Amino acid sequence: MAATTESQARRLMARLDALAAFSDDPLKLTRLCLSQAHRRAAEQFIAWARESGLSARVDPVGNVRARYEGRRPGAPALMIGSHIDTVRDAGRYDGALGALAALSLVDGLAAQERRLDVAIEIVAFGDEEGVRFPHTLTGSRGLVGVNEPETLAQKDADGVSMRDALKAFGGDPDHLGAARAEGVAAFVELHIEQGPVLEAEGRPLGVVTAINGATRLSAVVTGSAGHAGASPMNLRRDALAAAAEMMLAIEARALSEDELVATVGRLDVEPGAVNVIPGRARFSIDVRAPLDEPRRRAVADIAAAMQAVARRLGVALELTPTHEAKGYVCHPKIVAGLEAAVVAVGADPRLLPSGAGHDTMIMGQRWPAGMLFVRCKGGISHNPAESISEDDCAIALAALTRFVEDFRPS
Ligand SMILES: [Zn+2]
Image 1 (cartoon, rainbow, N blue to C red):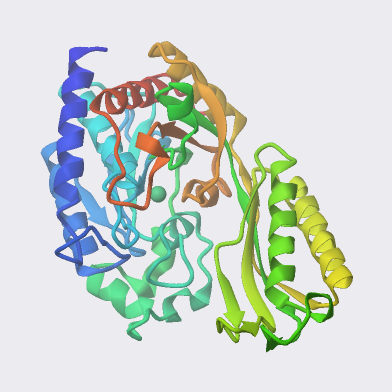
Image 2: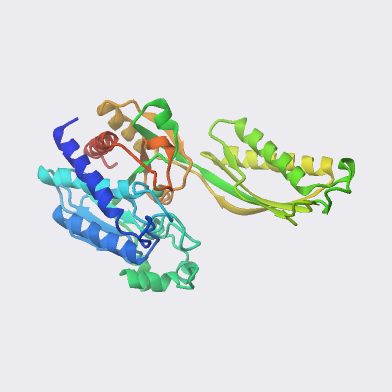
């Protein structure tokens, strides 16, 4: 690895530590969308961009943006970045790594006074995690120009509207349309994997093939409550026992297919007493897969299997879809370019889907887009224990730089 990349990586790791100090909670890292801590983190980001000779700004929708001009002024731009908002009690690498890596990459070019055929547009999105407001990804939606008119009216748990939060942050809710980006050739996001695959296979980098779509359902199983001592087993209609069988059927279906995942993450039991047979069980189902068709088939199979369990055990089942997001297949040109860049820096690229959603899936609606994953310790994310090594950071930065150098706008 070139010495410059190593020193860039060291500096990037130091900046990631420094950015983690901007938190809404003094005891843990919580930097919610458009909060005071987000505002201070954005100001720090702008100050760092200034050190590299860039003028950075907050755009109308709350993204931080900066441009490193190409050889020709007004050249098409390769946009690079990720988000700087976090979940509650977050790790310091989710999002921040990709946003600050874009800055490091430009630092490296500026230090050598290198200009490329493309301009580099840096973006630090502000609304990826969806913790504060129900509608999320408003930053990337703003660049693409697909924010819904009702977005600004949505309120957080304290009753603060996004319009007011955005105004206080330094955005311009009255001119959201002005955030729409023009002259962009492609978008690339570097991100921690947030899963265990790369670490398990001993590889530092992965190239994302697709971002999983998701279907969420809510299930209500109704049996009949009764005395836990007085009702013989063969005369019961136990809603929770039926729900348990349904959950095993969901798990079995997900296990039957590569890259399909399904999770029951919430369960409420009524009446919820130690000596009463459960009369009702409500639970959530979250099904994800890189491609939409296999996901829809899996959801249909799961629904059929659950109905079969309900019929056999004499309980009622009500299944309601609550959320549907299409998957995004990363652009083949970006996937191929990232693969070649990973090989060029001496790593073995692993192609894999992303189980989590990202701004890339919105950016991909308008421009060729793709993602590079970095291995993270234990696959842990959304947790203060999130961790990456400086060596992996260096190789990721080298691969991203290589991708940018070889990128040709078509
Ligand atoms: Zn993220």
